[in-house]
Image (cartoon, rainbow, N blue to C red; front, side, top):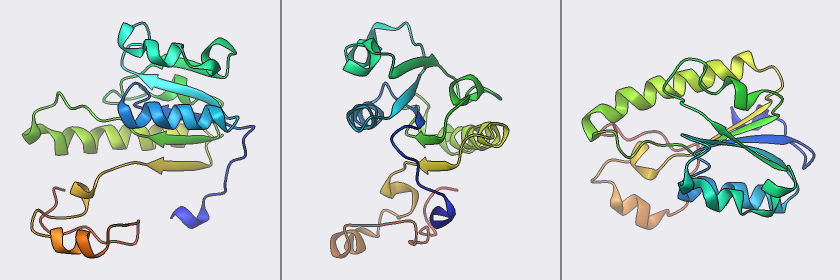
Amino acid sequence: VISNMPPVDSSSIVCVTGAGGYVGGWIVKVLLEKGYRVHGCVRDSACARNDFLRHMTGYSTGMLTLFSCDVSKVGGLDEALSGCNALIHAAADADTPLERRPAQYTCSSQHIIDSVGRTKSVSRVVYTSSAAAIMGDTDLRELRRRPSIDETRYPHPSAPN
């Protein structure tokens, strides 16, 4: 339950999965601007695609450390989570075929939960998602009527498991 998780102050280390993606990259940028140390999780930390992260001020000052992580594997997040106070999960694999995504995302989410359980320092978890996870295709009227949706919204029955 979100309300039971204590806030983390700006002296904390925050692990961000999907740091090399659009949403994750912005999360990293904002965290660094607010003074947090960040462990950025990407598929391959040496990949040129992640150069934009290395060009962030926090990288050269040691406030941002990049980790190669595979959340689809057991323990794939353990090293990056070590010493962290919070986790923001913003990773997704757009290359996975649509029909395999529910199973893969469920498995990856379980690996992430297990890693958090093994890492005693993590006291707060933020899980990013999309409206597609809680709304069906025919539920657009509600989205227009109530464009801000939070964790109190129950999943729509037609949403994937």
